[in-house]
Image (cartoon, rainbow, N blue to C red; front, side, top):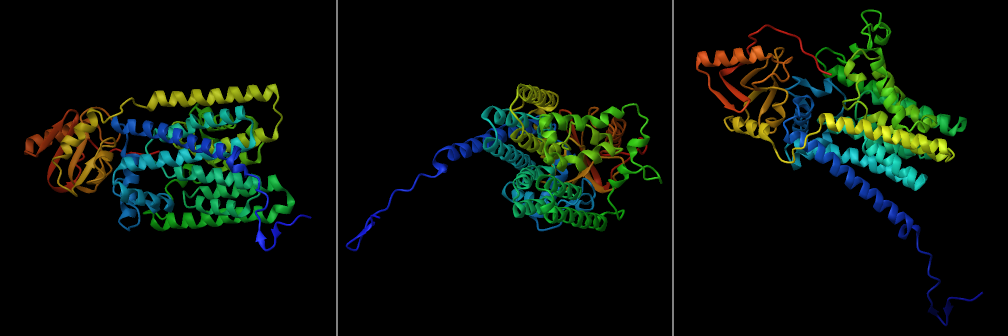
Length: 486
């Protein structure tokens, strides 16, 4: 055997083979980075276009802006729009991350951009799995279908929500479950529990998926996920109960019927029962059908179940943020399902049809909710004009579509007949928008009252600002009505 050392002189050994990173792996990660950039740009443009058009709302962009401001100030999250501690509404301590974002830019648009980045990260994560496990054509179909899916676009086009944090965490969790990365999966599950109280059920379902993947030898690890999910839910619900004014989550009422506590779906006589199953149809489409055979599909089961069983119609609809969790899980299941099935003509047609349906459903959501405003439009300028008459730190009762534009510099409350918080100003739109909160009758009566008593009234276009003579509750002039939120 020849030696590399001769007469005490060290000679270089053979040059090692270049690692895979310099070839296909480098290209794959550059592609993933490109996917993230495209997704972020798309989602950011769509979200900011709604801001520019004056279409964002206090429920929920204003609420989470106040939450971010609280965290940035070192306080527990409080929203004067909701008039409660947000830990008594939902268990979402992960929203403290938005407090850091708020420190960088104290503007609701910063949260819109942060949400776009999180959802784009989920798309990039699925792209990484698809490029590693699938044929190029399969990977492109899955990634495009997720990028333009109704589930993600609906979230982008409806303000900001904590579930955006769940999206990339679910990709990591699904990958870890499928590839038997126990510690990584457990870490992703633990962080997921900080997003929202119901995700303890999702973590438990991940334990079931682990067992389905890896069988009896892995039962202890599967049980660990289930136990973690149970503990997480108990802690979350106890926290909500502690901070809630009623001593319990206000959302539990959507899952019982009177004193029988029967699932509300059993007693629905609205004639629209089929609407409840829209989330299931969207999930099957997002999973490309073939993903339904993957054990990963089980992870979405709890979210789909509580939505179908709920008595709240908002949970049945596929126009809000409630489909983020099922859609991301469905995409991961589609990748894993395609990985294990034969590439037959039938599978090819299923993939094409499902991807096309996902894109069409996403496109209809964009057509319905998106705006073409690339710069702030007239409504934003009108709110800015009346806001110039506000002193810093004043209390303003603002209509749902006015509040987000004031929340960065003023203490915003909800303009509603049910609110009794003392305020200095009322800001609203003098046209029938969000009429169920504070009717046109109330608005016109308030303007008449202000005119008769000489209160200061500022107007810019349709936006009106009324200054009260002292800090006082909002006058209810046309009768009290109940309001609700989805």
